[in-house]
Image (cartoon, rainbow, N blue to C red; front, side, top):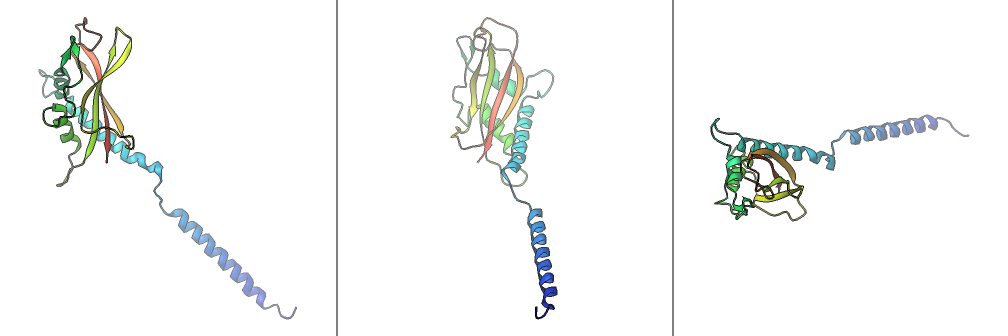
Length: 183
């Protein structure tokens, strides 16, 4: 060995390098990275918006009248003595669900409106076949398979018979189901 004075500088350099690597690890570990696991937050907000809209539609204006949603389902066409799917569920002008529901879910503060899409159906229990059935109520777009919809539901009582229950006269519970998604 000629000279051992350089060993101290070598140890100091290695220690400084390790401190820099450790600091880099801490900084990169503390940054926020968007992961697919965070997407559920926007889904929950969308689900709450749809649930609130259906609840508002199913709230009667007073104690003597039915709710707007109940009137929409009660006015579905009758085929063979039971309610049937809406005559034109994609008609945005004459189908009352298509005029009322978007007004509730697409409202935002400011001048812009949201652009939410939906498919609404009425699900019922068919006593004669002991199965569940579904009738299309309204829609403003079809699902293509790449969307990520959320499902919102609202139970309601109707006075009309559902398919398979044409002989029953008492009110029935049906489920209004809406698939809701954003472009």
